[in-house]
Amino acid sequence: MRHHTRGPLTALLAGSMMLALSWTGAGPAQAATNNFRGVNWADERDNFVDGVLVLGGLSTSDSYATTQTKADKILSGFQNNLGANTVRMPVNYATVSGSYWNSYTGAIDKATSKGMKVILSYWEGNSSRDGKVDNSSQFWSMWQTIVNKYGGNGNVYFEPFNEPHGYSDSDWKNLAAQWLSNYSGVPRGRVIISGTGYNQGLITIGSDSRFDGCLISRHIYQFFDTGRHTKQSWKDALADSVGSYASRVIVTEWGAPMTDGRDYDADADNKDDFVAFVRGVASESRALGLGTVYWPGVRPNDAYRIQNINGSGTSISLSTTNSSGRDQLRFSWGI
Picture (cartoon, rainbow, N blue to C red):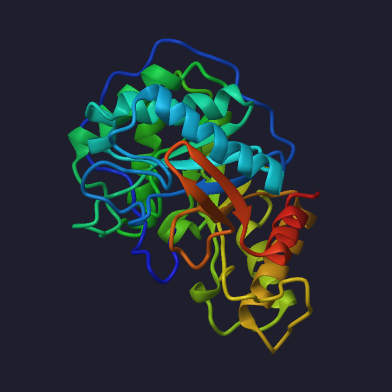
């Protein structure tokens, strides 16, 4: 989702369909999702962009080869500094339908070549931010292009819509079910269905047989519920939302300030709400075997970022903004 500088994340579309793919593949069997140890790689403007998405450290002038060179250094930073094996990246119609797609795929391809899982998630544009798909025909066209290219790549996961808060629960589920119908060749174990609202309503997704076999996305932030002040209260909030579906749930966004020197290794119940939040989410994610994907790994100038980009051009590297935050992130992963 987003923190204070980010607007609401979006939802799925109502409307037209594309033909379902004919190929098939076996999806990974899930006993737990803690094999997803991830971070979000985001646009500096946030991922709500009307035009082309430009991930931190990249440029629309970059060729495929240059994008691969830069991406290798950023992804290596995620792996070496954090122990990450997953990266979540945004997509939108402008990016996928234009000439820059040829370069953008360089980052996706580099991640998969390094053995990383890639979660591709659709974000609505900055001018709408209504929690609904901006343009249905463009939405389906975008996903057809993406699925045609990556449907057969077992390291690529598809998140049809990020934060579908503009839809009622039933309307969102109908749209998500339409995605599964349109792209029935995609193994369900590689489709991540957002919880209703701001990726918070998980049980209504898990209990709907139309989504059997799919993963489920949860977003959780301190500002979602500012009345919680203890680690245990956040553990309870996460556990209650997951219900009996822990084996399918991934926390694809959670984050807190990482650039102000806060100590997340200290017990701060009723003293620091962000520390209580991070420790609670990390602890319960570990206990439930949930994968987590931190917001953000890289997004220049975001106070929540857990990695800084150093250098410029292709001479770049990453460094950790907060070692105690890194400790808690790794703890959530079971490391």
